[in-house]
View 1 (cartoon, rainbow, N blue to C red):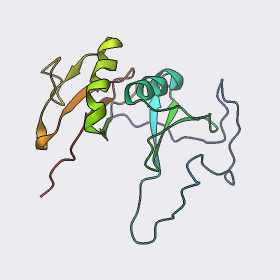
View 2 (cartoon, one colour):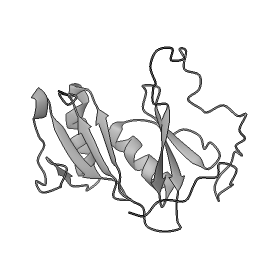
View 3 (cartoon, rainbow, N blue to C red):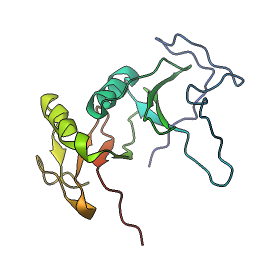
Length: 163
């Protein structure tokens, strides 16, 4: 398994409009409550060959907005205090990751319609063997699809039942 090089947040990439320093606040830092009893995910980096293309793709499917560049990152705010910070990585292949999004029942069909309009095949299973189908796991609906860099994205309307 190939590992990506560490990210240097001071690095200015072509298209970056805002330098980033260690005393600068993350765009998601205006969360009213700071955690007191548990750890909460605040953001994660998503490697992409074209951060704009990948961020705009996911934002279009999930009906979200792409934020302003933050140093070398391009954030997509998920609306729950978490951002996906897209980072361009052009020094080798992108290692596929899995990202699962819990979405409202009322928006699931519209997301599938947007995938179809974009010409993106969706699947009922994570191995992508059941094209054009959705699943009904845990009493809800779900589907998997690849983003422009091959990350395995999942939309689901019910969380997995955990033992």
